[in-house]
Length: 338
Image (tube, rainbow, N blue to C red; front, top):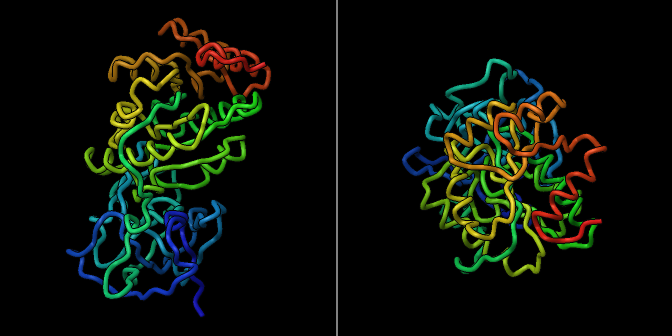
C-alpha cells in the first residue's frame, strides 16, 4: 500500500481516526483551507520533506502521498505562491507543513521545492473536508493577558529564537507562559520549540482553521479573536506572541498587533540588520522596546542600532547576555525574574 504522510496542517483533523474518501474536484470548487491529497513527483532535493503532526521532519520521495491544505504564501526571502496558481494539477509544497499551491516566484538560493500532482480532495459524505471543520470554537470577545510581542523586519530575523528565550526566562521564574504564533505560514515546529522552552501551552492560527494568514483582514480577525479568547481563559501570567514576517508584509501582522491592543507590555523587534530597524520604525511607525536578532550579532552592530534609533539591543544567543535580557523583561513586565 502506498505510504500516506499527513502534514502538520492536518494536526487539528481526525484523519488518523476516521476514514475518508479522495475525490478530484473542479478547480472552481477549490478554496483556501481545503484538505487535499498530493502525490510527490520530480527529483528529490533537501526540500523533499514533510513536517508531520508532531512537528517532526520526514523524507518524502516520488510516489509518496501527502495530505496537506490549500493556501497562500508570500515569503520575502524564500517564495511566493498560491493554490489559485496551480495548473493542470501540478503543485508545490509551499512549506514542509503541507501548505499546497504553486510557486510563482522562488529564491534562486533555494533548491527545487517538492513537487506534487493533485490526486483529489479529502471528502466525507460527498462534501470536501476543510480546516475550518476542525477550527477552535470559542466566543470572539475578551482578551486581557499581558503580552510580550515579537515582530520582525522580515522572515528569518530571529523571532522564534527570541520567543524561546522569553518563554524560558519567564517560566524559570515560576510564571505560567503561553506561546503563540499569530501570523505567518503554518509550521508546527516553531510553536513546539516554545513548549520545549517552558511554555505550558502553545497555539497558532492553524488552531482556528487558517493554513497561513495570507487571507483578507476580515477573515483573519474573525479567526484570531476566538483564539485570543481561548488563551484568555487558560490562566496564563503572560503571552509570548510572535507575529510572523513583518507588520508590512501581507500576513496581517498589523491586524494582529491591533487585536492585542493595550495588552502589549513590551515589543521586541527582531531585525536582520541595524538599518532594517530604521526602516520598520519609519515605514510602520513602530518604536520597539528592544532589538534582537542578526542586527545584534556583534558589538559594532549593537552600537549602530543604538546610534541610529536610540533603542537598546541585546544579542540573546550570547549566554553572557542572559542577565541583561532577564533584567529587561523584568522591568518591562514589572515582575521579579531573579
